[in-house]
Amino acid sequence: MIDVKKLYFSYTEKPFVEDVSFHVGRGEIFGFLGPSGAGKSTIQKVLTGLNTKYKGSVKVAGIEIKERTNRFYENIGVDFEFSTCYEKFTARQNLAYFASLYEKQPRSIDELLHMVGLENDGDKKVADFSKGMRSRLNFIKALVHDPDILFLDEPTSGLDPTNNRLMKDIILAEKKRGKTIIITTHNMFDATELCDQVAFIVAGKVSALDSPHNLIMSRGAAKIQYTYYDKGEKTGECLLDRTTEDKLLKSLISENRLLSIHSSEPTLNDIFVDITGRTLQ
Amino acid sequence: MRLGRLICGDIHFQWKYGFYFIYFILTVLYVCGIAALTGYWKTDIASIMIYSDPAAMGLFFMGAIVLLEKSQKVLNAMVVSPVKVSEYILSKTVALIAISTVIAMILGFVSGSNQLLSIAVGTALTSAIFTMLGIIAATKISNLNQFLIVIMPIEIVCFVPPIVGLFVKLPDIFRFFPFTACMNLITGKNSLLSFDMVLVIATLMILYIVARRTVRHMWKSLGGVKI
Image 1 (cartoon, helix red, strand yellow):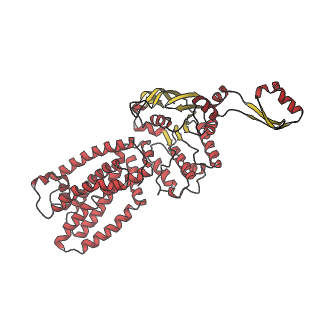
Image 2 (tube, rainbow over the protein chains, first blue to last red; image 1 turned 45 degrees about the vertical axis):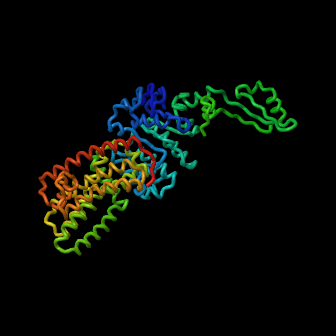
Image 3 (cartoon, rainbow over the protein chains, first blue to last red; image 1 turned 120 degrees about the vertical axis):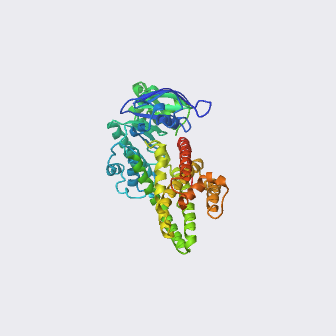
């Protein structure tokens, strides 16, 4: 669905995005992870046809972006991190207006509002919406023309835990409906849960590209950490698949001397720091 | 047809943001003002009112509309939709022409003018020209203060010669000044099929080409602004 080969882009003479290549299949969720200013938004602008002066090849739905026409936008939906609605229009009026810009048959506005829990707020002005409500409205605005490809910029930003869960479930449901989804985020936990593949972007380059599971497993197995008392509280650690080899742990268990024990595995955030030497959250 | 839906959207926008309410109040004031004048003055003052307000409303309103769309970041959503630059410009122009022409006809009728067709055509074309100027100015600026500064010289150049020309004879060179031609169309001094009409349409076409370029440039370099 999306095929990028040796993408180079620059605002000045110095390259801003360098040698970026990746492929996203139909029905996949692909995540761009990286600190602010790393080039994630620039890559997204290239993919959505806003930056066309790039080098290399960028094909979205089989169309080389440099040669796109306005019809290209019939099949893509973009959810920005900020609200892009008319403040004095109601939620329903905004959805109806933006749906009218497309030739495709729009999705039911009532169903979309219900999907994100705004069914009782459809006739309220957007100016009266909270940040979380705007975020949810913005999301369904990107879905209203039923696009095949979705670009989501920080889709869970500003949402409370309940709506965060709701949003992630909807994204996964859209994936099941066959949508190809590109997510740009700082949130490693969301990326781990949602994405089939992630690309770490640092200084305009792809530092790593794989599934979250493979990235995590490539950088070390899960560990066990335990505490016990021996002239003061002490801590021990061993790999999860080597527990039987840890004589101290065995003796502590047999003598009931453990104060606490828990397993831990590296997170995508740990992997990001490990690979790029940068922090993200 | 998307252009039709865009025009409806723009009319709805102008309604919701109170543009029509402002013009309802102004029209009532103008009608009262014209009704208070005597015969000879009525048509000339009505022409000045029509030229400087409903016909020129695009210059002021386009600044407000584009700045509102910029500040609410609606344009970000617009540029990733199938809407073309030409459709964006034309829908706003047609929406403003519609209200301009209706108000101009009301003022013309109240003034007792027998040139209502000329007023309608002249106002529609003049409104389109001022809307293009408003778009060109609005795409270049990022707040209301800047906009007011930018349109001040435009107002002086576009308003003074045509209004002065109603009362004194201007040098012949002003026959080639498009805004004097606009005023001539509104007052009905010349027939609709005249050099003035050709000059106005040519000016409109040039401004449309410039407006397309500036809007395309604005769409490519969107940034956050406050109004």
